[in-house]
Amino acid sequence: MKFIDTHSHLYSSKFDEDRQQVVKNALKLGVETILLPNISSKYTNKMLNLCHLFPKNCFPMIGLHPCYVTKENYETEILHVDSELEKGTYIALGEIGIDLHWDKSNLEIQKVAFEYQIKLAKKYNLPIAVHIRESFNEAFEIIVKHNDDNLNGVFHCFTGDLTQANEIINLGGFYLGIGGVLTFKNSGLAATIQNLPLKHLILETDSPYLSPTPYRGKRNESKYILNIAEKLAEVKNVSLEEIANITTKNSKKLFKLQA
Image 1: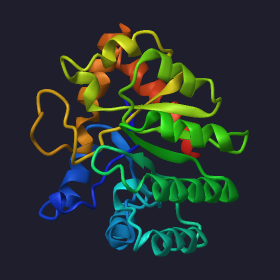
Image 2 (image 1 turned 120 degrees about the horizontal axis):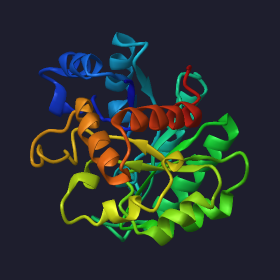
Image 3 (image 1 turned 120 degrees about the vertical axis):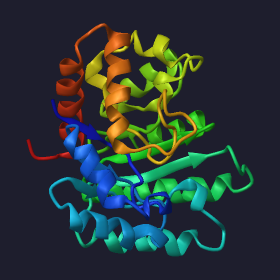
């Protein structure tokens, strides 16, 4: 069985001591592909260096994470995204979106940065990895505004309800990114996922964050995609092999990965 971790920050300092081994451990367990969303220009080189070490397994995205949007730097940061895209080495715009968990005061410039990057995605015909922490309505409104046949992507770390899930599906080109929260006992996500076809789902870890049960509170790793897949198989009452096959197919289609 082969799996794809569609969202993993393995360039994080949390992996400075054993980054290569973490990738190798995932590969041994069948996680053949790991997609790396960027968060700011500070991490671009570390991310690309990892991709150069594992050119057949690790693939980079480029984007300005909403938590790194500030009045002072966002224009410079999105120009960095723009210039990097000209190199043609990226598989998606990500991680981009709206975050209202920490700071609501900069919502308007978050919107500007998000819209700008959506336009870049359409210009370069790339999918987007959307961050929606406590901001589903705000982010969704912007995506609807720009949605057409040339926009697709994933709502990263989806934890919403069935209504929100169906709103995403009805956009036409978007998937739900399912991660460790699915394994949390009281998250309620399993009840939502029970009602959704697998053809709309892809798997992610969001390493080093949101470790699945039984590793909550510890550093997350790409190899734990198997724990998420096992829980999804349980929720959907299908085999682990079916989960692997369908979610891998979905991921390859969205990110235009080679078969």
